[in-house]
Length: 486
Image 1 (tube, rainbow, N blue to C red):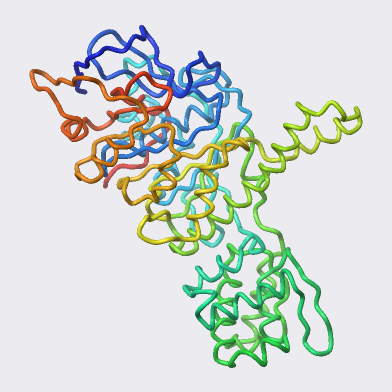
Image 2 (cartoon, helix red, strand yellow):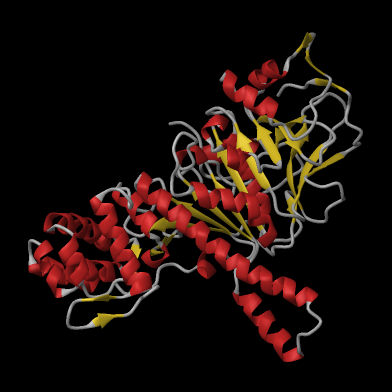
């Protein structure tokens, strides 16, 4: 890879620690300085929460860099050749392209698979070795999996708001009649309660799809206020989601819904197939020291959006509650021994500090239109650090991400970019000063030229705590990288 001559040289001798001015005890091995001079190791500090953005055109190495970073977060041993960690946090990756579904397979030059041998060759000269990783890969129930080691996950529809349902249906809950019906039914089921004329149904915050169906079918006010065709259209779509194995819980469908089924026999089969449970719990997904990868490339864009936002919303609420207890244990002098023990037990059962990671984030966070993920992600990057939440994203298009999200980034890692507007965005939003001069060979490079000339696997790194922006060669992976063309 290229070596650049930079002025002024960094004052560090053998190591750069990104993200902290202290000599952090917990860090991930990111790579090496791609600047002339002695070999300088680049580590990333993990002692505090971060918001990180990894940019780069297709094929420049951004997903590979993300994989290298994640490997360091989830080693089974606390001290390894790629990281030093305390294993007190969990990691959740939303994989929108499916390229991380082989991350539980270690690389080895002795592998029977030729591709794995070729990928392992990159480790030569880096003083690293294959490290056992704690990785669990999850596939949406109802989709196919390539490995028997993958687990199925389901979602609890009670985590969806009326806005989420509106997005799934492609309707505005305030302006469209179908959307208004959805919103009214949701409010009645979850917050207000409803009546069918002969009996009253109390609010049910932990609702099932069947509850929405039954309310639309029987509530006196909804029957009077909405045309039968509007109700039928909403019911048909709700039934589609009820039949999707991804959605939980499943309870017996109201008898009045049988008219939606062409065959009563098929209806009875569906009722028996789908067990009643509350969806995959956060405690299953988020385990200290473990990387959980959600494979989302086989579900629709709309469902992917809503699933991501509902999970992040749930994680934030859980971490707000747990972090408050953690702080109270450290601060309050008034807790009795019994209260302290009870609180400690609740913290243990709670959600650990978490890294939330999104590959190709422009797929669900576009700047040109608001999605259901936008508001919750803005809150996550603005407030999440207070609750022990870090956020990391990759994208091919910096300008395609909502600027309110990128404004909160503390670390930019940018691979090769060629679109001028994207390059200008990076230059104007760097978190540390640019070097005075960058040369490759006898040529002095402008910032634009530098970003265009980076080799695959090279990146500039800019952090709020760094002396200046620098150029890095990314550390080779120790697990399989699935982001290659066929």
